[in-house]
Length: 324
Ligand SMILES: [Zn+2]
Image (cartoon, rainbow, N blue to C red; front, side, top):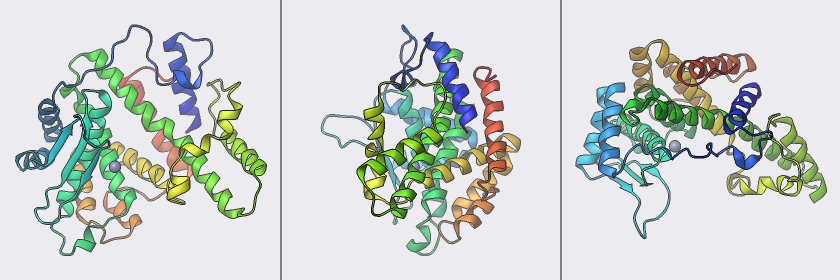
């Protein structure tokens, strides 16, 4: 992963015209660049999402249409509305509910496509006989949603008619997908150490954290002078406090999603069949079996990850800039 992360940050640095890239630069755009405006109203977001989903498979568009008919889409941000975004399955009708706070930004499109993936999963698993069968593992749920974000990228013209905007949106998405992996590894390794060393001093903990940070660190960003903040940086990850050992799941799911995307690029219809078949199984199989049903290998070996990252790199070269 890290070689790809390094290339991404190097490109970022060049794009921004900086001699040194600082952590706060990674979310920045060059001066004068305006934010992307993929839609203006929530009606437009719904309409474009339905069009985008329908191109992947008409059934996906039907799911969103059904939710719209039932008024199960509360997408727009408004005064007094709770923050957040989620898909909530509803057992009676089988048509879930999507709640989010859209404000016309790029980020809202990916949230909608992501939650839309969860919604398709809810629809597909609904016919299962018992509610318990519909309680599927988080990793496969996030394969459904994260794969939808990636597979739909070929249809993003729906949201971005301008070619430069489209490229920017895709770049942003791939950046987000890839650069999270080192952080997942850091958090996972750190919490393993915490639980293997129940009695440790603050100094030992800080030293271990810094060591792990360094192990999975890119070689482009300049972190100098930020040692105090970096040493305490683990405190911003809620999972360490509230849900022990829950974080690697995001990595497992994202790798599954990239695998799904790779299948999609090789054989769209087959990939869509596999996607639907796996999701329709709900939680009636083990996670490796669900991966298998989706045509994915439950394999996270370096060799497998290399194949996936080479695929991402090829896609990046084709869709965005040259990642040399
Ligand atoms: Zn999700």
